[in-house]
Image: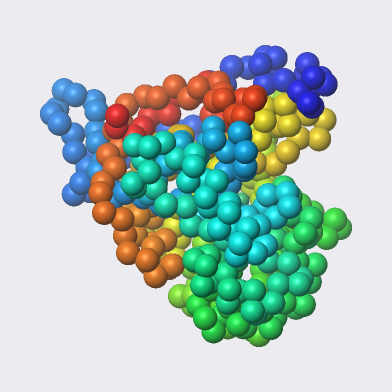
Length: 398
Ligand SMILES: [Zn+2]
């Protein structure tokens, strides 16, 4: 394993700063969270009495519209974290080999369901996706729809973890995309160009102009989710696009800017793709995500990797947030003074886009400090979550 070869200087545990000293994009907002909360109470936010600091927020049970759970023993470690808090999750298909067929999706779904704890089995439902390749045909899309696949995922070839089988040229699959549009099959996009000559902080914005807009000119009625948006360009594009264009937003892209990658040393656990951007982009993404617009919804992109594969001379992209994600989102919405919009983002906007009903049942968040563990077990190793060793001020009620 890579973990045996980690240079000491790259180990999270050897950095001279504690995690509490890490600069956060929201540090100043973090300090002022209490007043902003009490100045913007929603109907479902309750403070039990004037002396108790705890505040609670009860929302319709949420869904995660972008999730990686891997496979095998590693999957058995992480599926319970999502199943505990969410009712449905869109499962990404970037396994090795990728999930490209209806049968592969059905088989993967069965393996996921086998990892759901019995107490959550009546409530949790994985929603399956297939991986779009240059060779995906309209007939295959049709078969996938009949099998219950809810969307196709487009990875430009080489864009991120296990994306080597991705689409090399979006125009090669236009006929398939036209068929998807006709039958209402959404396309979920990893919206970054992979041209190595394009600066990696610009790849999302360049994708919009050179790939997405030309595609929508040819297939204007295609339902598209721009996954994990990270830039002002993407936030504004989605906000002003027709209703068939929406976006998921991760907690890290609402809470962190790119300084978090280089805080007194390289921070491999803050490395994800699309990469964290500068503060003006974080502000724009958070502003749109918390605005109440139905075009933006919860998608954690929780993407676990073994600790050693992150703390490496060529560390993997992906941040693990599943167990703490609702608390992170509550933190971001409270910082924006918009806690009352969290329920729409987490529980209504996604189902609305996918044509599904909202969940029955409720989840209550409480404003009580939660110390994020240094790691969680992950197969035969461990995975380090976002904000490991730090406190977050919201958690799901026990
Ligand atoms: Zn992802």
